Amino acid sequence: MNKELYDKRNSMYGPQVVAALEKRNFRAFYCATKEEALEKAMSLIPQDHVVGWGGSATINEIGLVDELKKEGYALLDRDSEPDPVKKASIMRRIIAEADTFITSSNAITEDGQLLNVDGSGNRVAAITYGPSNVVVIAGINKIVRDIEDARDRIRTIAAPVNAQRFPLNTPCKLTGKCAECLSDDCICAHWVQTRICKPIGRIKVIIVGEDLGF
Image 1 (cartoon, rainbow, N blue to C red):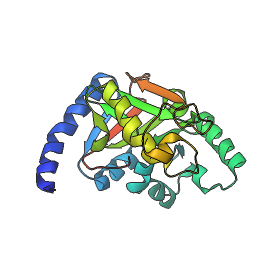
Image 2: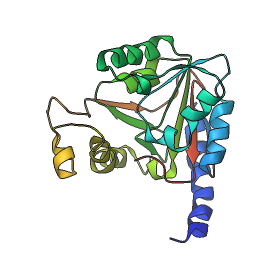
Image 3: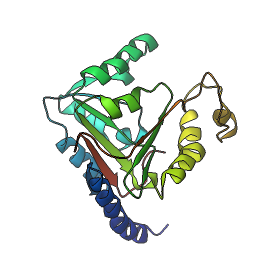
C-alpha cells in the first residue's frame, strides 16, 4: 500500500464527509491520525463530566479510555466489571447518568448519516436519547456511499467480525456472513439510522484518516 497516496486521498475525502455531517447539525471534525483524534476527542469532553461508553474497538485503538483514566475523569466503566449482572447495571446507568458518551459508528454515509446496529440496544439508546454530549470517533474505513451500502457494510464486515469476539452461536460467528438470523444470540436486534443531529450539536463526530475498528 502506498500510504502517501492514501493519505492524500483521505485528506480530501474526509473533510467532504465532515461538511455533510455539519449540514445535518452534527459538530464534525477531520483528524488525519489517531493521535490527532485522541487530542480532539479529549477537547470535546469537559473535565467535570461523568463518562461512559459502548463496546468499541476504535476508542481503545486511539487510547481514549486510557487517557480518560490518566486524566482522572469520573468513569462508568463497564469493561472492568466481570459480573454480567453488574455490568448490565452499569450499561443502564450510562444511558441515564453519564454526561458524555463515547462510541464509534458502524457506518457513516457520504451525505452525513450514521447507521448503527446493536444486540442489547444500550449503545443506540445512548446515542439517540442518552447523555447530553456524544462523541463518535470513526476511521475512514467506516464511510460508505449511502444507507444501503451502510447496511451491506454491517452485514458483511462489522457484524461478522464483531461476532468473533464473543461466545455466540450465530451464523455470522460460524460462517463469517450474515444470514438475517433470529438467533437468541443475535447481535443485530436494533438498527438505528441517525439522519440528523437533534438537538443541534449534541453529537460530535470525528472522522479519522486511518482505518480503525471494524
